[in-house]
Length: 183
DNA sequence: AATGACAGCCGCT
DNA sequence: AGCGGCTGTCATT
Image 1 (cartoon, rainbow, N blue to C red):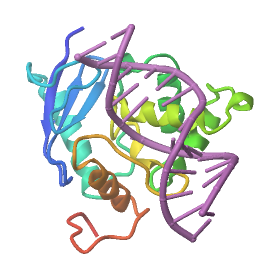
Image 2: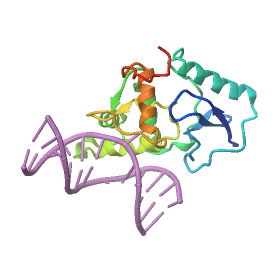
Image 3: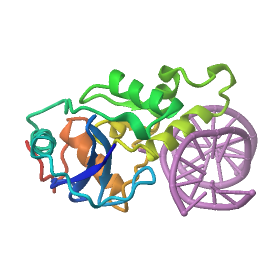
Image 4: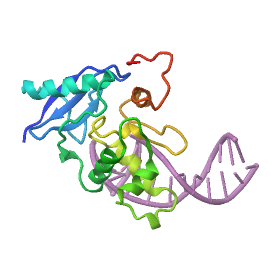
């Protein structure tokens, strides 16, 4: 099945994002043109006007604060096994405006042996899975935080800043002085 | 209360 | 086969 790319402008500190779309839906999302899941961002551009328009419109509404759930079709091809299970758990259990810790998500996913989980091993594994998440934004990995703070974020040098921006948009964090999003 | 060591693994190169 | 990376707990001070 072929993959094509759509570029969408955003108010994020990291700038525009690129989305990989297939006939099944969105397969990957990349901040600032980094490769995802071993697939290079770039050509070919998406020529399906309807699909590209839908993606652009939904994201635009989300960033403007007019849409809480993206509700875009997802192609899970780049998330397999436990990785996919954790991502789907996150998508199903953590709604807009809520957060969950790495450890708690690990427990709820049920893919780790909790009795043998001494020292937060499962939590680290979840963190690694979030870092390798091919579906940024669609699967709300920015709502996963550390037990004692914000936690980390990939997506380039502006990663953490981007995570804060998204949490501010969703009302989890108070706006900063340089907030450029919707009220 | 603050700091630091350490344990352990998925996926890319 | 190696390595880097979005954490949490415990033992110190």
